[in-house]
Amino acid sequence: MKSDNLVELLKTGNVVIPIYLLRNYKKLDLEIDQFVFLMYLVNLKDNIFNPKSIAEDLDIKSTDVLNYIGILSDKKLLSIETKKSDKNIITDVINLDGYYSKLGVIIRDKVNSVNVEDSSIFELIEKEFGRTLSSMEYEIIKAWLNNNISEELIKEALKEAVFNGVSNLRYIDKILYEWGKLGIKNSEDVEKNRKKHNEKKNKDKDNVDIDIDWNWFDDDTED
Image (cartoon, rainbow, N blue to C red; front, side, top):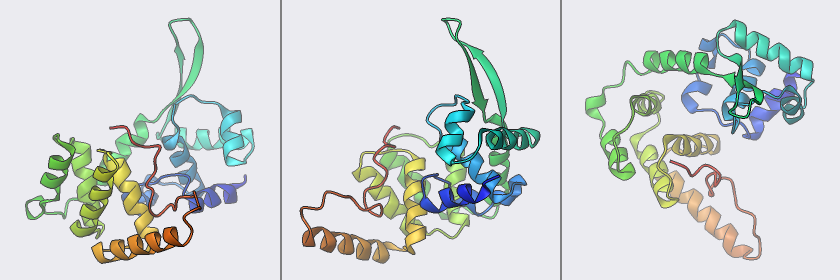
């Protein structure tokens, strides 16, 4: 099995993995290649199970895809189900309810030490989003705090999301993940990165490419 291909996929950043999960994936009882394969499925825009398409995306064999599916199924992280449309078209779909159930347990276990009363970040995010946070969103924010991501940095990521008209935590989590890779830890680091971006942009105004450390995931703007 070409597990190295999956590890390389993780390094490219093409598979988005929440920070709290990346640091705690072993609690899912998975090897790194199995974990990356699971994250690929989580990142799919639809839940249709197409072994050939998945194999092509990951540069592995279709038999490897089926092997991974078997492993994840045995670990109760997913299941393959058959659904029939109104037009009687039968489609195999990936059900990830098992994964989300175990993810909820990981988050609850991880955030027990966070004192919610000491943080104002929840109220701030609700104010900027213009709505009440869901229980899962609440736990995700607590997981950030418990993983030593400062309120200062979360607020900066929130500013980026609001500026781009995005009001969901997945978008903010992506920003925090990318900032973590760049070594950005506070608002001063964010400002330095902003200046660096602007200086590069001014040097080459004809360059239409956008740096990954500034244009945060244009394809994820839905609420």
